Image 1 (spheres, rainbow, N blue to C red):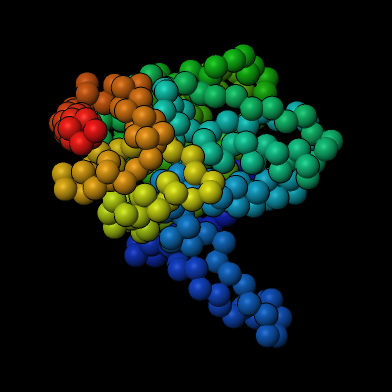
Image 2: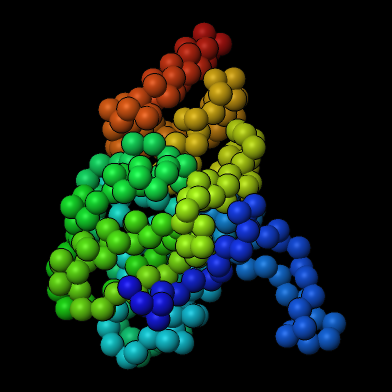
Amino acid sequence: MSERNRICLTALASADGLPDAASFDTPSAGSGLLRTTLVDAISYSRFKHGDAAVARRFASALAVLAAQRLPSRPVLVTTSAFAKVPPAAYSLLPPFVQQLRMLRPDLEVGAFRIIRNGVSNGDYSRMTIADRRGAIDAGDLTPERDIEGAFVLALDDIRVTGNHELAMDRCLVEAGVDELWHLYVVDAGGFAGAPQVESTLNEAAIDGAGDLLDIAASRRFIPNARLCRRVLSLPVDELRDFVERATPSLLGWLDAAVIHDRLHQVPAYAGRALVWDEVRAAMSDAGADVS
């Protein structure tokens, strides 16, 4: 895939993570003007755990860049593949399509899903290069509709090793796609040799249950697979605190997510899924005793 077929909002410059959100002077902005970091550490991490307001900001910025370069032909937009529970990248899709249609009324813009068979056995962001190669394959991915001859834009949050991009390429090329562009929030390809830097970016805003609950309480919140797995990873005391403070609707969504992604059958998550069941049952019993 050539560079001209990739668009990204920012390139990761440090293994320590993304910059903070503080405004900084920039000569190109002119004397006395300030520019804020578009993709900062806290915002990106919140986006990865369900902050849809940040997702809209990222998606709109990607749409602006795409609108400047796209030829006048119909396009189909997709995101990272998933089985039942969507990843954070899926929250980019609706605002991106909406913004692109507004910026380029000459384009026919559609959207489609790529369905994935199964889930990764563990946190992909913490995996080594070798583990990533075994975690996802083009054979696991299936477009939900006929896309032969289409011009496809594939949205995603980050590129590190390029393994996921390669699987997407193979899937879409085999499906007959005529042209494919990849659009990323972060390009971390310079750190492909140490791909766990992705986990550093994901965790920048998360120090425990309180941070997850804060995101869930935001006005624009869309739960996703990462949020589910991060909740399951909480120490038992924090997990109890989370269950006590979370809304019934969020708890119900998490119950369903664990079932839909069959996490009890995924070795990396099976034990934590059982702990979730036990905590949920204990809290329900305690509530029944009080009533």
